[in-house]
Length: 554
Image (cartoon, rainbow, N blue to C red; front, top):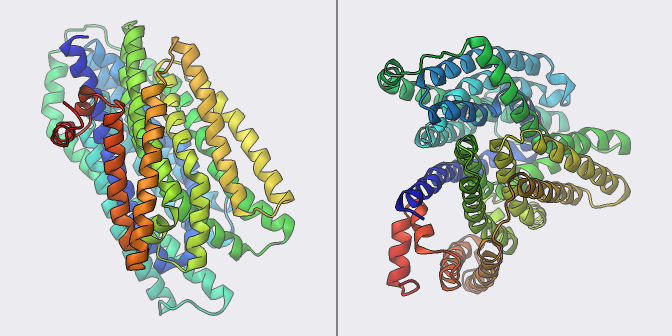
């Protein structure tokens, strides 16, 4: 393989790594502010927020969320043949498209909020509505830069978005509760508890909108700084054929629609489970609504939130691979596409497998470290997280393979696969909830089952689509064995430190550090990662230097 090919491979992983790092940093910020936010608005407030957020997410997915990936694919195809003028016309047409679609979606969510959530959560859902319109414009700008294989702009905007989100969410929640309730104390009566929780959830929803707006302002500033360079490339474009806006709009619609359907169906399980647990189950079994929303706040606000952190790497890898695979397919480079897919899958597994094992082994201290609530709440959230840990691997691989299929032009396949998985998981969730006493554990089982079915079906579809077979030993077996040693070491250190300090928080930090070092060492010793692959990761040269200094690598 040529040095040029290696350079391209390294650049691909670096760009994905940049986006992954931003995603992980963003999620860490999200976790850090969730603790004080949870302390302010309580589990009931988190339940109202998460219920509204679930339906906001579905409308966002249908209208705007897939725009960056879809637009990056369409524009990347034009940039591959240096049609800069047509690429920019696609960008402008996409802005017009999203102004209409995003505006309509925002109005629908605002006026139709009562159709999705109960009365107490309606103002929360309405607070989310304008964010959909803003996010659509932000998504077009992110997709434009991603098509140029430049992930830095998206990464910086994501981090800024989360910082503003965190600050405004906590601040607004506190001010709204204190301002309208006159005190931060939790009322003794149920009506007062509901009102307090609603004000807190509205404040958190305001933070989401403020963060997206800040990200949009940053991306507009970056575009303005690059405007002269963009138009200079357009002026020197020698391609005479110019695509009409009608043809572009048709192309965008044809590409965006499958992306939207795939992403919406893929994420619909959360909204379906939300509706089953918070609306259908209480009505049929005559259960207390406040208790249902409190439990839902624990499951989605703590356990599910933590399990989603490692998936950021797969999401970033998916965003990076779509334009790359699309270009290779357009150039009819089947082997290049297979190599790119194999590298992406391996990189994702190297991160997600140890993450899953770490969450399984250290579930309780991780939950307590992030959400220092009463012991019964922490124990419940920790058990749910342990059940969700394996879904980290399933979701990571299914997310990546879904995007690979889209990059290969098989845009309808992920929709079909997601539909099958959704039907099965919904049937299982209903059966477990109505015929067993598993309660929240039913949701964890259904979530894991859904991710597992999606993972299997998408993996089979990718293999059939491109004649691709993943290398197994270095991609799955070695990371799994290394993670086993890591988990054992981390657990031993944690238990030892806990006996000495009697503090879960203090004991967790050395356990994580030792676990990371053991995993890194075992991967090198078992030759799960080569020097070239290590260098492909962000700051990879430092990892190589550390490995050589410890005599793990020559």
